Structure formats: C-alpha cells, structure tokens
Image (tube, rainbow, N blue to C red; front, side):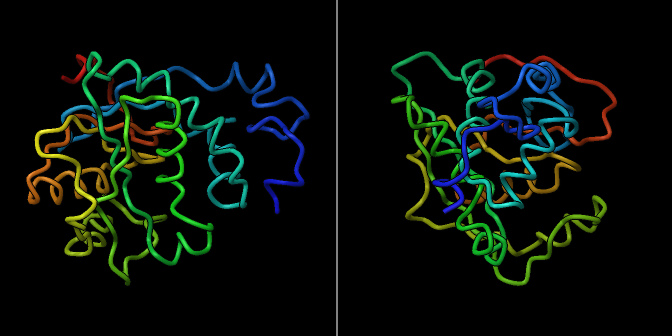
Length: 218
C-alpha cells in the first residue's frame, strides 16, 4: 500500500523531487574500493552517511520498498564497471537476510535490489544460493569477532539456487562494515564450488585505511 499511495519523492530527504533532489544527489559521494580483508575486491557506491544512508534506512527499515529502483540505479554504474564483456553472463548473489528480518520487511531487501538491478540487463541474472538459519542475531552493535561468530555455521547453501559452474559472480550486500558477512558468504559459496570474483555494496561503513583500484572481472 505504501508503494501505491506515496508520491514520488527524493529518496534521501523526502522532498517532492524524484528520485533525488539536487542537494541529495550532490551528497551521494563517489564509488570506491574499500579494503576488506578476506575479499578479493569490493566496490561501494558511497560511504554510509548523508542521503545514501538515509535512503537505505528508509528502504530497509521504514517500509519504502519503492526506493529499491533508485537505489538499484545507483548500483548500476559501479556494476557496469566490473561486468565482463558481452555476451558473458554475470550472476548476482545477494547476501541473505535473517528470516525474521525478511518477514518484517516484506521480503529480502538485498534480493529485491538485485532483481531491480538485473531487470534491464539481459547479461545479468540473479541466483539465491544462500540462506541464513534461524537464530542468527541482528549484527548491529556487534564487533568484527562477534559478527563472525554470529554467522559461524548459520549460512546454508541451496543447491537448486546455485549459479552455473564456472559462471562470473558478484556478491551483493547493502552495507559493508567489518566484512564479516561478505567473508562468510564467500567462504560458504567456495565450499559449494562457487568462486566469488568481486563484492558490490551500496554503502561503505568500514574504518577506512585506504582504497584501491581493481580490474574488471572476466
């Protein structure tokens, strides 16, 4: 109902300018490659601050599922930078949400972003091989060691959801903080024979010590 009755507004501040007002658009920041130990490369749309953070929270925690489209559009430019040349197909692998969180949000919010991102890209497809077991805690407030312990043994692989063997893949999440989720997902996928080439996230919330530039996958 929210998607139907709310008028188009700025994803960052709610002003009646869709999808971003000039002020929020200017405050989104620039894509970067945060250093995440245990991952080959991770590309982030921007820092977890300002209008990008606000838009994500409105989408994720406040029922604004209509914001999936403008947020996916932000992911589109960085994704295009790392896609291999056509006709190669790349599979987006969303990091899974806790079952209780997904129910409260009307579905898995990262998977929804991935579907929106792939909608107009015939060379991009979505696979959902990962799920989280019940009992996984919300990671907010946990440090790096606690986040890793929280995920230990709780990621499951759905064989029916795996991408084709040898396919190019991009692991997608909304925020990277300590890298625990991306590392756990990558390790679990590796145990199922799936190689993760690169990570793509909306927001970089790492304690940044530097950024790096990485080549395209493929």
